[in-house]
Length: 433
Image 1 (cartoon, rainbow, N blue to C red):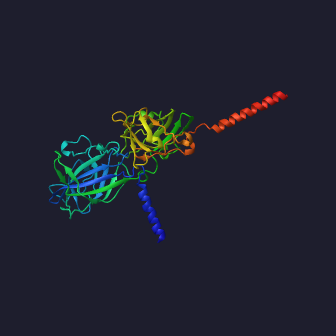
Image 2 (cartoon, helix red, strand yellow):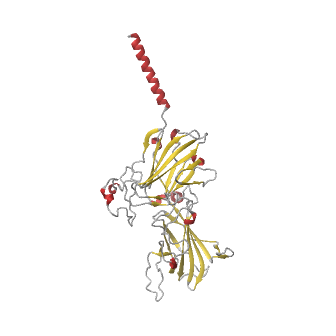
């Protein structure tokens, strides 16, 4: 019995830990259902999806939302989204529902749909920006008319078993919970209205559930050492090693080679690390009161370009960022007493798109940091980041003992001593000879 309890405790602990991000402890995707009116056989609800993650966005092909109805509900109509399948609606005559499936799967509409199909904050192809990057674009919504359901707060049964793909796996959703009804302001902002009933669903992300291997790696270099510390070998797994393409291959000249596949299978450039993305951190210059770093992000996937990309770095000197030259920058301070994490992202319409692998498949910037005399040093790899995240996933760092190191003064002293000893012996040999 004790063994069973111990195993259960560890399982629960691991489950919570897997979905907990120490750099964004409050990050989640919240799905809110607001019933705005009752119908003869059900209700009309507005479903709003808020991405409260500071640096993890949902990229193309966008989110996919699913759930299981508690009873025999159907979806009469939708505005701003659609289900991927209608299901078996053969028992209905005349007015046919939009979806009769017990487990509907909903996706966002694409941009440019007719106005009568649009709804506020809809029709972005399922793309949701990160809250810390662009709060106004971190919201998606649609309207749904549900039939064969409860027609009052007491008879409505909440949907269950919510799932969220963003766009792949990684999200785990909790049960729906009734919360205080949402209030709305009229367009003239002079009157408040209230939802008839509201429930929330919270979904959290785990990189362990999303993929077995990292999706990016980090390499280091510095002005004080000629050694370049590369990404670890097979940092992102070598399962694609047999299907990679050399950068000078004639295959890359074929028409359609850059077209994404339905299964999102990558076409990677052959590298020793086999990562879709590499982040390079170069300690470039040292001034009296400042030091300068160059950050480069390179895409090695010929079938993927990254829109709204983000890079999160943890380093103790990010509390003194003086200037970032060609990226936007925002400090991330989840714990008020610690300011060692920041988010870099592209400037809108300039470099917020990381193109597919090739000559244009990289973005770069330089960062000027002010030294803290009490902590600053180039010794023992202090100048390199502790953690690096690209698009919300943690990248693999090189082993600490491979970081570029300062020239060892002990070795210099030993060399000088050896030279002096040899010179003295030569002098004695010549004198006594």
